[in-house]
Each structure stands twice: as C-alpha cells, then as structure tokens.
Picture 1 (cartoon, helix red, strand yellow):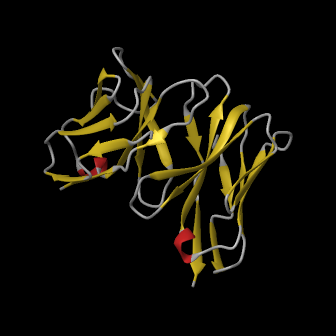
Picture 2: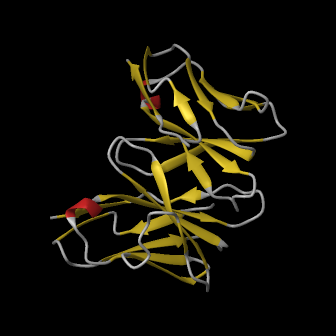
Picture 3: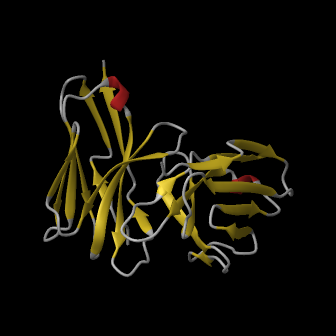
Length: 115
Length: 112
C-alpha cells in the first residue's frame, strides 16, 4: 500500500513552454501533498505544500506564478512549470501524506529538461 | 541554517562490511527519517524513529537517535552491492506541519 505515482517520468520541452506534472496517490487519500525539486548530486528542496481544495503554501524563494500547483482531489495534485527555461531543468519529486504520525510517501520523480 | 547534515558525504566500503552514516540537526523534531535514493530515481523510505525513541531496527538497518546531541546514525550491516545509493536523513520539525527538511545526503558505494 501507499503508492504514489508521477506522470510523466521524464519530459523534454522547449524554452518558453509550460509543462504539467501529475502526482497521484494510488491507494490512499492524501491530506497533503508536497513538491520538491532536486538538482544533480544535491538534496531535495521543498518547493510547496499543497492541501486539497486550498491554495498551496510556497517556500521562500519559490515563485508561485511560475510553479502553479493545483490540488483538485485527495488523490491528485499537479505542478505546472510555466514558461519554462533551461534553469528550471531539474528532478521534480512529489510526496503524499495521509496525516497523523504517518510518513510521507514519495513518487518516483519527473525529470524535466528544458532546451 | 542547514538541517539534517550527514557525514561522511561519501563512503566506499567492501561488500560484507558495515556502513555507518551520521546525521546532525539543529532544531526540535517530532521524528527523523532515513531514505535511500538510487541514481535518478525516487526516494525509498527506510526507517522512521520518533523523538521519544532511541533505537530502531529493520532487517539489516539499525538507527539510533540522540536528541540531546541532536544526532542520528544509520548502520547498514553486512552491506551488499545493491546497497549502493545515496542516503538522506530528513527531520520532521516540531511545528513544521509535517514538512520534511532533508540533509545533503551521503553517497554510499559498496564494492563487490
């Protein structure tokens, strides 16, 4: 149990285009979903916290207009990278949390390459 | 300030040896977790230790937590080549609404 999927697993796009990444909790309902980014050989940095039906909370330094997060249901959150640029190329990972003292369950990640 | 600093940053051992990785943190925590990440892949949750626990075991893994020193260690016994990966500690900080703060990670290489 507690499986989280991400789609797509990798994407290559041209500079200036927008890319949407989906995060789904497959067998549980997630109170909260988190979005992280990870540059090569670096750690995960939290970008934003998303709760179903409410606006996401962004970490300091993360542009909310550039990284749009929609949490439409208890099993789905999407991250849209708008007007992507090469510096947005990174590994984006989501996690889902079902509350209480449980841990976060991580998706397999999405590799974004902006040309 | 960086929460969850692991050391060493890189560790290379022979298959069959034990691997010990350390993590230090700065604030009060609800729990501390260890994750493994194979190159280019997602995170695999290894073990969670709560702030009122001192030691936990899971298979070949042993985790300790010393809240007075704000440190944790992860011991992998009888290592295997398949244990080669990056290992991260992450803290669930008190009052942080279950947000995790990750350390920089340790790269473990197990030589066959």
